[in-house]
Length: 169
Image (cartoon, rainbow, N blue to C red; front, side, top):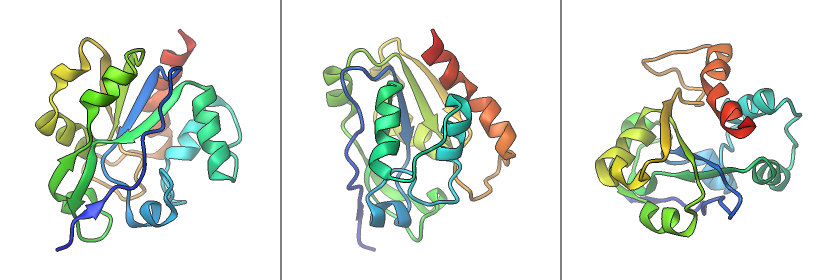
């Protein structure tokens, strides 16, 4: 099986307060070169609900919305082997360079892991000590694929409310 490369760069700048870490983009997202590019993924609708905004159609405007709100995105996995787009089939993952990221952007205060795979890969390959006192939470996945911890859209929005609280402080 050919390794899959994650072609999405981190969406982070000197203003980022909250970093959302996914696992590995699905095939649709990689093909579009967009974070959460599958229209069935709940990520953008959850962000819209929490920030009380209409999510723009254009990807560049979506990213600008996150930047303005001090929200960053990246993934725990730089490359892996995977059949299809399911996290459950990910093997032989190589992590992204978070040591570099946190040195470049020390102002990040909160790290939210989008689902269990993201958290587990980060914990296994990078280690939570690199967070260096930053708050972190393992969030319910925004994936449209039901996992073992199935939550309704409303339950996901409720759980992700920590994002809004962090930005309101």
